[in-house]
Length: 474
Image (cartoon, rainbow, N blue to C red; front, side, top):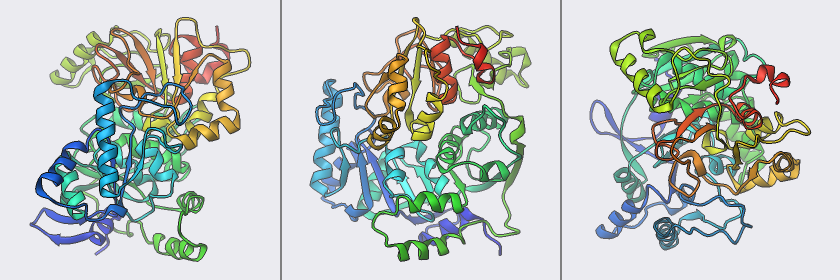
């Protein structure tokens, strides 16, 4: 029978079948952070269990770490609870022999940025992590998904996971993205079309002309955020773009070993005639620069659109959600989203903290431009390697001259779990993945958008359409 890519990856990692819906799944790599792992280590200790495969683990301090521009080697966590959390995490990693990128490691960064760039993610792998955005790795043809703390303990002890097999969905994106749009705009467009529950329970595979044209980093953005539509996993079949990315980060593989692996990776695609439980199709030509207007990633519109009203909703529950979101976000139905004043700008996160994202943001900052006097804007690289590359390319100089804060790597203002937090009522143009109530700080207001859109908003002091950016500067 023809098989989907998802089915091939699951079958190749099945240790045992538990029942009609569940299998015991082997994990090639398990990634941890200081936030979701403490109870798992405590569970191991209480049961007297070792970590079964320390060499198949990787750990990063990223959620609670401050991103102040302190020199590498001098970074400290001043919030006591966070410092204790990171300190205990370090002790556990040392105790069990697990590789750790800690607070002052030059390569420290966000787990979903560090893992691919250090060559740990390769096509055909199963990758687990106590973070929902582990779907990022589908960009390289790896099956990645988030797990809970009790599951982390099980993986540490056995290198396996009791796993319920997902249904399959294929989303085909025809045509090419218009000028001024990015993978971030594409995924916001898609989530707005299918809803925050539209892929719930599915392993999604992306295909089509628009997907083929994306870089590996752009694919990571797409796979990262598709979890916001409820996807349990997200995949893109590896191709020459993937292989070039992996070749540049081949790690301990010899040239012969790598090329042999690539020959086998070419088979990692859905067979002709493979059946999916659901098929969706969209045209990339319909995508515009997108911005969220509400408190869910699916509450998004094109930047030249009007904020919807509750009466526009297809059903009462959606209308009620619209009313609540507009009340929280402080916007009026029927008003244009463009021109909305903003107080803060955040460029970074596991969604948009890679070097291509920073290049895109910097391209919006022309000579002589400066962050608006009413705005505080931060650029937080996704890793130490990204930060070094941006400095070598002069991107950091562009940001600093224009009045952006150039900071150290970390999750930062993606979530209010460190000292980069919005104050109540502050409105932020953000390149992150979630705009939930209180996500960036209690009573804060978040508008998700691409790095280019966020950079332009910082200069203009308001949300602008970058397709008319030359005339938008004031």
